[in-house]
Length: 424
Ligand SMILES: [Zn+2]
Image 1 (cartoon, protein in one colour):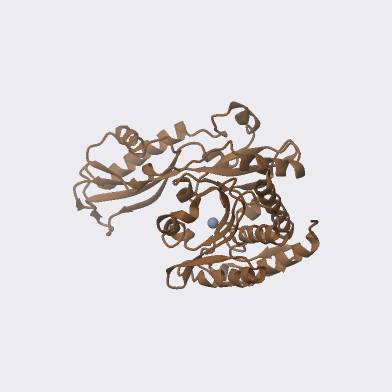
Image 2 (cartoon, rainbow, N blue to C red):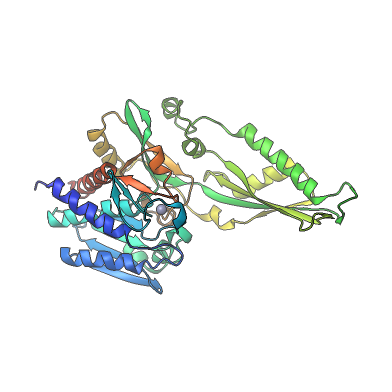
């Protein structure tokens, strides 16, 4: 059946604008408002769904169109919460869903309510056009992603693993980059891996005393000394070029100096907190610093800390790993799969000779919980974001262009339709 995209685009934009007007700032979340919104729409489409309340006013929506069982399912998945806004710094209404000069503004325009609607449109079109599915197709929205997913994806994985007996999931964690062009086409990245978080607390101990009298065992001097060594070591070892195990890809990406892409396949380190003393004239007995390190999954956190400790070489300094659970998580899924081939095929149709690369996201997403139970969970918002648009993640005046949004709906549908109607 031929799809009238003009009508669908109008419908999609209107649903999107309404969805942006729902305030699901987390905390407190109130994501039930989002779930209720979709329930109304699903009822109109006569699509079955379930909800799970995980906390007051917070729930998960899980809707399914049943296919034949030749393959395990595909889940289109997103989070319904958004990060809070600093209203006075916005020039537009963060919960207005306004379209101004072909830009659609609102908290969640990028992260990630636009993608939810792209997935929803793909989902209802499959139903409306009675596409014969070779697998189940699931549309799922979860709360609480922005504060660690305890009431969202983590809850679903722990409490209803039977609903997650699927092969693939699509969520956030990758997209197209309009400002990075290769072969005269935008670069696309699909998230298939995450780095692990390694937060290290460093504490230096010294002898307290009067600020007027130096005595050589000042905790602040010790920590400064240690941090200088750590910074110098990191700068020496940090590669400013794109890094991956694939030499051909490294050659293609040679010119790319995007900080996010450069950082993704190597260890990074930043001093994010410093704390010592509470009076101008007292030498403090201890000084503390926090290092925010992000490590490729093949690097063991404790070995990394051991390296830093040896480098500092001072027994009066204590090193603590604040994120000990990370080493047990499986943060990577398979890359060479049918879904990746389908995405590449669809993108190649519209952007011939484009390069689509495996991305390691520097930040955490809900994909980590799904990868950990063996699902090929990919991060891909099918839009081509400008530098300004992608700076909208957690920022003021977040927007997506109308073109990016409606194009994303179409690409999401094509990917879903192609994967789920393919004959084996
Ligand atoms: Zn997000």
